Image 1 (cartoon, rainbow, N blue to C red):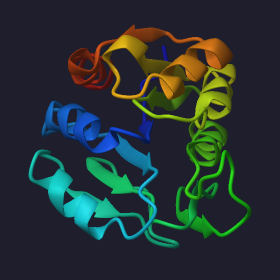
Image 2 (cartoon, one colour):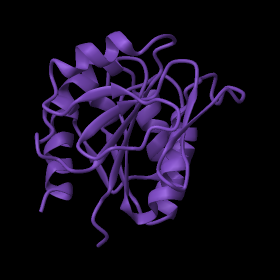
Image 3 (cartoon, rainbow, N blue to C red):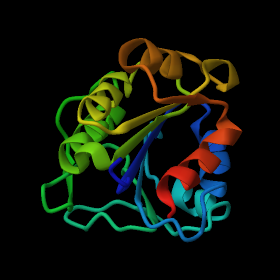
Length: 188
């Protein structure tokens, strides 16, 4: 099995609480790049600040041309699709919305799948749309791992259910068991 290099997380409705639980459970020495796409609608500065209070890893906004850093949670900025270039630097796009969203989880996941191939883990959490389902399928198609929050444990079940229906999952777990799984998959 390829050792994971990146964890891409997508959420929408109910996402702050889900991210707080998941990120709060990640090991402080986790070496992977952690990318987050949340349908926030505006600036993510406050989201980063609030999540940092619950997470042992630094939480920052992803900025144009910055490198994807290991051991850091990087959040897609509001109003921009977050993509990775082949040199693993960020590119921001104002292309059309996908699933009525920009940033789009599908766009970020698709980019992560292309760059990290089997070294990617995609995580779909609570949400009220189907954004992320196609991107998760791309991660799985390139040999990456798909993790989906059980719809019954989500504040909004539509997003995890769409992910299961479209991409399936390697692991489908209640929210509180996702961080321990990621730690097991990612740490030596």
